[in-house]
Length: 263
Length: 262
Image 1: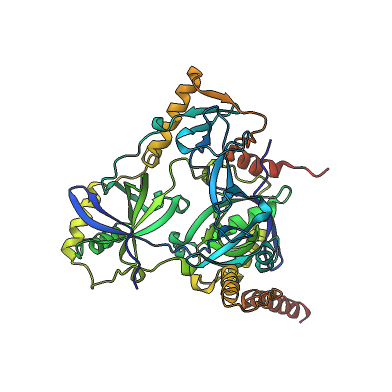
Image 2: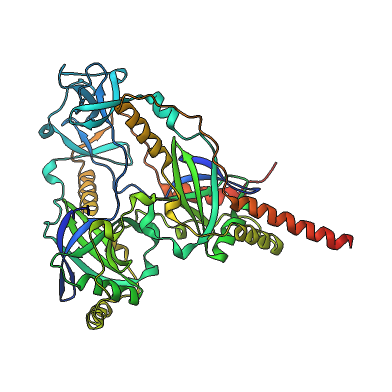
């Protein structure tokens, strides 16, 4: 079993073409807590009209944008399609910038770019050149009807794409009412420098970044499983997505891609 | 008009306590739609339904299920779910690590921290952080969720950015380098030339969410009862970077030819 990539495209600039597959770099926060009946049937979301007091079918539903209380502008799927950017498989690389100048406040979601099978050479050349010169690529691409602005970064020979927030989505300090009142007093700065030094450590352990709620739920689930308490087999009607081991899939893609031999 | 703060707290570093206000550093510009009944434009209500009976189930009759690898669910009562730590409005910094220890991919959402009492502690701390090249690791509970975050300087102000939880972010170090034979020296030189040809600065203001802008114009036209022209999307004119790079490489080829024919 290998999960399919989220999307496939080609990093393009000039005559350079590097076909890649996109995978998310974030695992799920924790196993989701699904709402179930007391008999163990997973609940499903439905929509109902409060006036007619009944559920409505998909073809009775439209999308509305609220312009004033209770007033809506209706937009159809067709119209949204017409507005959508033209479909393309190009990851349009516009320029290379100094990696250190990228502000992580602009980073939104991380993805891995795995080389498409049979094309590791161009991928490796690009990743290595970017790493040696400390450059990140700025690119745009269209995925599932949305246009994304991304930074492409190379680390350990592997390319990653971080979607970037647009400038009007990031607030400056002034926009939240913060203003500088001149340089801070050296004595105050020195006092904080001492506090920082007292708590300075060279590294971080994973335990520091753990979410205690996740641990608590996992422990509880393990205990109940062992004792067979309240464990239900999913019925055939319930659609269970197969649990995915993201790292395993990525490992196979990175290693397998290079081992293909042309017949 | 300045954006309002969303939360108040006390930042604790060793024995120091800074009363702070938290401001979101990110503005959500997504256009949100409601689902409406086409017939009467009533806003639809969402309900959770038992698919086998088609009937809605009241929240207090529900359990929570966690899927196991064996294709089954372990059921949990709502009161078995862990309670988050009490929201005591304390942001505790437990250590300061070198900036490079926290990978950029670990950062999630940034917030600004401003002084609640109008003092200069926040900017003094930001300056000390900048000089130290370190980032503080902090924990706090906000809106029933526990967060872990990085405390860093941003343009002279304090930024607290939430971090993804442990093990959530797959790092490149966990993956093997794509295999293949080593590249030749001339191949590497050429790759570096190509990278250099597209060298430039990154100004975020240069890029716009054009889809969102088109959608905003459509909504505005509809609200005013005007027609909207769905323009055939033109292929954007490529910026000159590429043209310049191609011209430069052609010029080099020409010079090369001239030398040979001389």
